[in-house]
Amino acid sequence: MKKILFFIVLLVSLNGLSQDTLTYMQYNLLNYGNTTSYCTEQNNNITDKDQFISTILNYVQPDIFAVNEVGASRAVHQHLLDFAVNNNGSDKYRMADFIFQASPYLVNLLFYNHEKLVLHSHVIAQSYIRDIDVYRLYYKSNDLEYGDTAFIVCVVGHLKAGNSTEDAATRQVMALNTMTFLTGYGEQENYILSGDFNVYTSSEAAYQTFTQYDNTDLRFSDPLDKPGSWNNNSTFAQVHTQSTHTTSNGCASTGGMDDRFDFILMSNSIKFGTRSVRYVPGSYRAVGQDGLHFNKNLLDSPTNTTVPADVLNALYENSDHLPVMMKLSVEKTLALSEWLTTDFEQITYNNPVSSTLFIDLMVKQPTSLDLKIYNLLGNEVWHQNQISIENRHKLSLNVESLQRGLYLIKFTDGKNHSVVKKLVVKGN
Image (tube, rainbow, N blue to C red; front, side):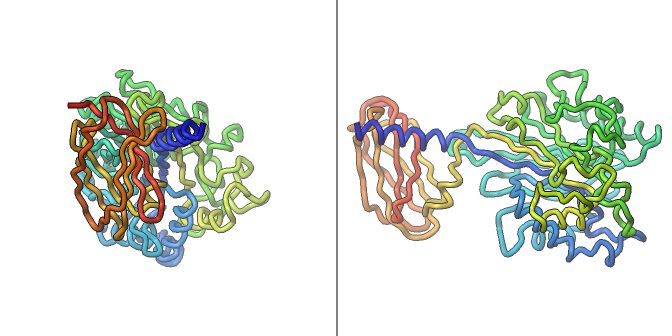
């Protein structure tokens, strides 16, 4: 009975390793590092914004952080990474390389949690008015060395602002250019399309182009699925993302919360999880939106209790937009929570295995390794203990006594913290 219970624990642990959750956040930073006649060092101070952004990021903890409205200076980009995104000496985030084709007045940037993700490539989809960027990321899965992982393609844009017919037509051109590019880039991808779209209704041509594109394989879905005339309509108070202000400080737009400008859309492969990445139902929201501040500013009564008070203040002070976020389930093995508690930084090994198990380990500090292999009945069938390792360590272990089949392999460090993985033995 004890063996059965132990094996159940191992299976639960293994299943826990087979899925991870990524948080995606999109945010218009309101002229970050871009001084204009109306957004100045006094009313849009970059040092103050650093602290506000840090507060918001510490609360949301995104793994992918896409932003609009950043000044074009590479020094500004590095400042944003060093003093706002990687706050308090953190090294969690990397910044995608900066490239541009359009006049780099206000640009998009993308930051990602490098403990989980790697940047594969960055290209420009279209450059009419402003660049729309395409960032291809892949997940650091344990089967990466065998050529298997999950890709996520982040398309980040900032469409033309304004409520005139000409403005809407410009947004449509930008949308069509983007979708044409994606047709050549690849239909079968895990696409996320996010940004400040500046659209006023779901019937606007740009939004329709994204969600009703002729090529059905490239159509994007809106996780909220709330079509309608969003502008100045209390029916949609729960989804509005602008403006956090009703009175002007000279930089932020006014009018209160009455527009849905900020979006995260997803491809069908993410909606239905056909390529190892799936939208987590119900996880999409505008951070700090309680649905009770239509045509009000974010700090007006009634008190907004959806986020902590310091986060609410940061959202109000930093930008006239609210960030939007959603979660993605990744059906790959990373076991980040376990990696953080163990001395192991990386474990790779040949799988399936014949007679020799080759293990390549990276450890954060010198430790010992206890290695056990269990069969599907929960019986320990192989054991190697007290192997001293430090830095990078490679092992060649004889496992020819194991019969063909599926096993569980358990790595335990000197702190008695463990990581459990699958092992396939194909025999001699």
